[in-house]
Amino acid sequence: TDNLAFLTNPKVKSKMAQTAKVSSTDSVMLLDAPWNALYGYPLAVTTHVPSDLTKGSTSGTCSAMIFGDFSQLMLGFFSAADVLVDPYTNGSKGAVRIIVHQDMDVAVRHAQSFAAVLDLTT
Image (cartoon, rainbow, N blue to C red; front, side, top):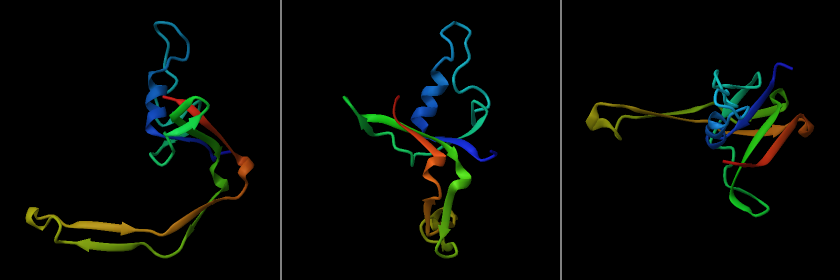
């Protein structure tokens, strides 16, 4: 489908950019141009994907990567976005700080639409 994608953290992205597809001197890396795609599927990177997981004797250094149909991910918004204009925090610099808060929740419609690897070492 058009909604299949990968999701991981910056540590995994960095590791894939340094890992050769084939061990030779002129091999391209797993994560080659474009940087936002992996094997033809979109790749999203966020620090919200854990990089401190434990599996077996590897403690606190495993990362996760998720592949799935993100049309099966549901977002529920509880209110409109709250906007706060703060002219005081950086007022001496002549700057205005704008803060936006959004209350939301995330749910998965069909868990079988996603696969996760929880023991990638970086």
